[in-house]
Amino acid sequence: MSDHTVTISDSASGKSVECPVYKGTYGAPVFAIKDVPGELGMFTLDPGFAATASCRSAITYLDGEHGILLHRGYPIEQLAEHSTYLEVCYLLLHGELPTREEFEAYERSVEEVAHVHEHINRFYQGYRYDAHPMSMMVGVLGAMASYHHHNLDIWDPENRELTCRRIIGKMPAIAAKCYRYLQGLPFTYTDPTRHHVENFMQMMFSRPNVEYQADPKAVRALDLMMILHADHEQNASTSTVRLAGSAESSPYAAVAAGAATLWGKAHGGANEAVLHMLYEIGDKKNIEKFVARAKDKDDNFRLMGFGHRVYKNYDPRATIIRQACHDVVDNMASSDEPWLFETAMALEEIALKDEYFIERKLYPNVDFYSGIILKALGIPLSMYTVMFAVSRAAGWIAQWKELMEDPEFRIGRPRQLYVGPEKRDYVPIDQR
Ligand code: ACO
Image 1 (cartoon, rainbow, N blue to C red):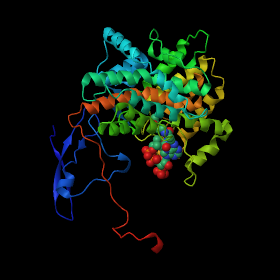
Image 2 (image 1 turned 90 degrees about the horizontal axis):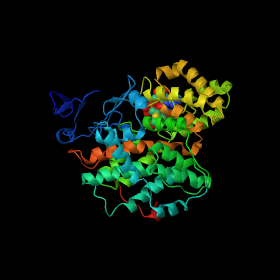
Image 3 (image 1 turned 90 degrees about the vertical axis):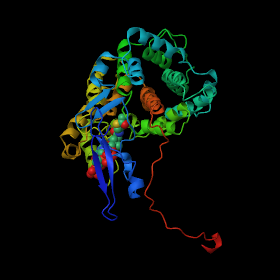
Image 4 (image 1 turned 135 degrees about the horizontal axis):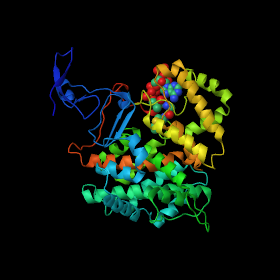
């Protein structure tokens, strides 16, 4: 319900239009512009959608000025401390935290559909030995659509539930196969007797004929990482999933499109880019030089892991993960390069005192630290964005489900301001 309006008037034509204002639970209100084209004969221009709310959503709230992130109302700090990734998946999808019985039933139902079709294994064989695992993940997710199309009914609530469980369940197996293919290791199978994240680690790291038991500290660190990356409202990859879903595409194909978007280094690819940057910096004494490069307008180098479209104070996930980073680096045997963390800390300190970063409100984001944790877990650099994708699948699919259940559902179709040539006649090639 709207209790007041915003008036947009066109000084040239003298026409105006009343736009209803809507308030959400929190955050800036919005005014709806759907009558603007009809009344004023104009569209709105908003490159990068920086001022546009693309949907109503009850899943995640974030306040970038105050560093707040809530999933279904629960602060990320509390979920990070008390919950598990799979419980957060349930919360994102169903709106409420499960009872113990509901959670156990959910866990079983996810693990029941966590295996991937054996034929998919052959699909991996088509990739080069040094393929980027994100290209494999995007391809395999797209291929999944071919296994689940006969019995897919995106308009049936039960079928949607099954699809959500399938995607969340199968992501770890898909990621583990990417890793094992590149490592030259035989593929593994899901073990329904293990919890979701432990199962993921077992699929990734077990070796043939060697009993594998994941280090509980490592399982907890990965679980935490996955909670922190589970959803982040209408970011680029989630908006891509929604846009693809709005065309009534297969949800597997929509998630593949989301993964393709996540791969970019301005988005999920940043965690890998942070580590490349730290290796390039190499030594603390070089930091000043790299900070100067980041500030130089003629150099397109940016400090990876700094800045965020929405967080202009601090990224609450970064605060949580920064502490976890300390714990992991202090406690885990595989943290064989402690200088990485030291360099990261020194870079953070120098950048945060610098006027350039202060003025532009550029703070370390979650990806600044996540790579260091993944490194300590023994996960190779090229797999970082894959790990992000496995986690973000929860948000993608919860947002897809919400879209499909939205009474305002319609295909997403932005407009444009055409600035190309005026109409002209075709000139035959020998007369040009
Ligand atoms: N290093 C140096 N300068 C930066 C950085 C950076 N990391 N980020 C932004 N700036 C500067 C820009 O040059 C610009 O300066 P100007 O006003 O003098 O022209 C100003 O800060 C604003 O930058 P925009 O690009 O307009 O900010 P936008 O909101 O569009 O971009 C983004 C946000 C893409 C995250 C950007 O900060 C960036 O590229 N960061 C590095 C990559 C990264 O860490 N991405 C992960 C994001 S979090 C996630 O996806 C999980």
